[in-house]
Image: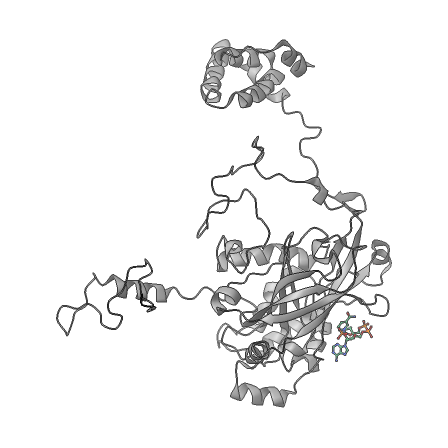
Length: 491
Ligand code: NDP
């Protein structure tokens, strides 16, 4: 048997000639019947998806997170379960302002987005190489990004826009100072720290919450460039950081980061001189010392940039039991906007793509949408249901309530203290005898198509609204209602 690889169309049909279109005579014209040519041209037109509005230029690598220190007293997250435990991860670095073709070595904040494929779902920590940000209120975010992009008329970056905004938003000064310091020009992606930046929460087995910040300290040492060095580098290599990361890993020189946390109790948070949830502030190391958690190593380059980096979708909303959000306003907004951006940019079912797909089972009631791979199969697609085999929620994963003065943030049972029967019964009693008859006939006609245990469950509701309502439906369904059931619903 030949080991020749046969070229095919996307439908898998063998192709005879991939260099000459079908034409009427050697000079043309082309024929519509050349579906091979049409398919190629049409697919080519669709090769690009919208680039990210921010963080468009990125480089990523897979790696391993290994626990080196037990922090189970702070978090029950399975990723931290025991010293030595390893979890696969993907880290995507990026610049913020530049488009997909921008040079890597420009002065900018660097994105530092990590996806941990934990055994209790994906945990995304979507951070930067700086511990703070330019604004503390998400209402300013889109406006801020406009100032970092191009002037609407000249299509050029504009210092007026940038400094006009910054000079009117003094909360930017901390981040501006870091951006224009040496660290604004990292020599390589391996030689910079990463920060979760936001305040998150950790929850332990006793369901106690503590506030937390994440730090990733480069084990290659911080190394930065001067403006002159970066200008010279960009002149000869626009892909310098991608090249350095890819080649280092390909050569077995695998970069590592020491993963640390800072923790703050709720009492300390109330006493802290700044708002601990303000993204423009750090928690001083002296007051909140770094606690080592583990080591993250990048050790595998993606095989296909588009599939594994361009389509990699990170969202702070990807949290796992034991790691939660906080009142940080910027984080709260990002919980929505990142996943929303991926649904627009990659597609409704971006979480089903191999790079984004959790390594643990995924079972929910979301269905269909563009490019669905059929997640859920033939299983029940609604909840609540009486299907014992269908996935169920487990209160063991409930986060503790967050007390905010007079109110607490929690999932409140919307059915407790609610009377679902009186008004339905009042309406029934308004009906004439003929209307009651038509209503119960229509209901019996529809309900008769459901399984018997569903009919019985629904009958109880009719009886609770009005005994006559229940009796008429039962009669029309030919169901003899047991006396004890009547007593139960009327008590
Ligand atoms: P600390 O003395 O406790 O912290 C100093 C930290 O500053 C260092 O640990 C280092 O962070 C960071 N740092 C050192 N040199 C530079 C530099 N050239 N550019 C940017 N950051 C540097 O003081 P504070 O905690 O009160 O922080 C002082 C300032 O340091 C902050 O306002 C912030 O700008 C910056 N910083 C603070 C961090 C924090 O979590 N407290 C983290 C990063 C920066 P690292 O060890 O992470 O490299």
